[in-house]
Image 1 (tube, one colour):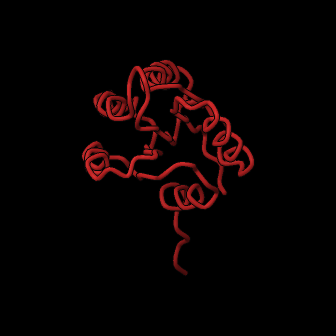
Image 2 (cartoon, one colour; image 1 turned 135 degrees about the horizontal axis):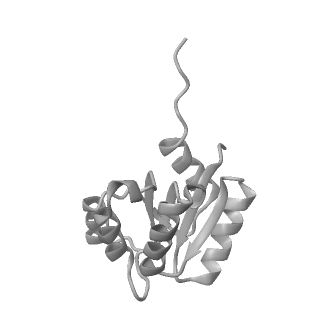
Length: 140
């Protein structure tokens, strides 16, 4: 798998953060893996990192839906309102336990790249990276 510059995990569950961080490290997906416990922390991180140090500006955001302080939908609305230069993540993926069709529709309206059920697995991650980051081989 080609490594990404940075992945931002946004989730309020420390156990899942640990497991997802460990999976990303085992698969050597990103040079940096950073964490935020809610959408507010994630926005603060993006404001800080995506203006000064682009090495740790996330290419991929894995976002939980239900979190305290600022949930995934509020984060997405605020993120999409940022200047385009600060929306550095090529892919924002909702990673949640919710299978509610209203949540799926709302995520689609906010331009979520993918909507995955927890937990993140190697197969889901491989598919996500292949579909959004790996360029297809040229035809001969």
